[in-house]
Amino acid sequence: MLVFFLVGVSINVQAQDGFVMHGKRSKKIHFKLSNNLIVVPVEVNGVELSFLLDTGVNKSIIFNFLNLKDSLQIKESEKIFLRGLGEGVQVEALRSQGNVVRIGETVNLNQELFIVYDTNLSFAPRLGVPVHGIIGYDFFKNFIVEINYSRSFLRVYNPNLFSPKICRTCKVLDLTFYKNKPYLKAQVTISGKKIPVNLLIDSGGSDALWLFKEDRLGIVPSNIFFEDFLGYGLNGSVYGKRSKVDAFTIAGFQFKNTNVSFPDSLSISNARQYKNRNGSLAGNILKRFNMFVDYSNGKLILKKNKYFNEEFRYNRAGLELEQNGVMLVVEEQLNLRSGQLIKFGNQNIATNPEYEIGLKPAFEVVELRKGSPAERAGVILGDVILEINGKSAGELSLQRIVKQFYGKSGKQIKLLIDRAGKQHEILFKLESMFD
Image (cartoon, rainbow, N blue to C red; front, side):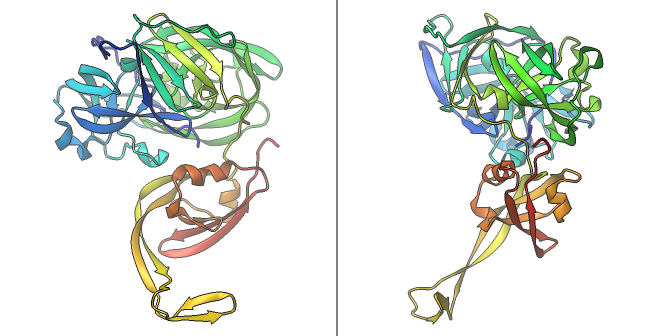
């Protein structure tokens, strides 16, 4: 999928003591990798939740709080306003202290949380998996954290007991910090020109690379680009240009023909407050490495993994979906025990069929790229996908459906959609903007 979580919240408050892990050298924590994003199990005041692990945020946030209010027993405190990515207004939140948060066998007995009440602000529908909040700096600051993207686990090390292994194929980078967010130096090649860049490490974005347009530096889209939806942030949708750079280089590792997005200036006004920042390095590149993140010493260790040589692709259909509730599905069941079957050619037809009624997830079209294959074929916003290429959408995950939109050019997509209670069949072929 595209970038789905783009908060980039900045709030200057005094740091808490943070997470601890008593008497252990290290401990493993399994996570789900969803659309290049890390979703970890988190326990808040005894309630089991799921959070996005995002190096791009410096404070911990809970979303859609009204549905969790009774069980979480949050201590309410002062009202504040959060500003992140997107073109909307600031989001009202409450700052709460004294919360007990556990991630694996690490615990913070006095965790500060920022509580967002707006029920419309939920990122789970865009990801297709439960996500109740986001955590970043608060978790990373007291540990050395190994992120193994290829096997979907974290290993948290006590820095006082950590002894690194010799790794001849690893590369070590220096990190710098601005408002408790990590930055690294890299290089992009645009129209043959090599340009040094300073990038936020943003594990909460599922794109590959974001760059902020800067004409004087030559950081501009190539002649081949298209306007698109880039993602959904704390303050609304983010739009911009999608293109390619000739190459992206980090610590000697090079990726050619790399995906890049240039977000509209209005969407990133908050991010541009740090004048030395040129963009973000996000999940579609980060996942190509297994890494050690060491905030206390300002180091990042990279080792390429099985994803390293994956092709960079865009959504070639031009539509974005979200899981918007459920729909009632009535399915005919063949009653083989009744004996009431007749033969018609090679098929058995039930004379007294039974019906099973169930609830299936409803996947709704929420973004549609102008001029895309899906739009030209007749898809409109609000359409609900019932089937894709003959398979019931209700039997598939959101990730499995959207993955088909990233297939090879020329691949045919056959959709059965529901529009205002009527079914329509839509056919189109995937198209690349760069082939």
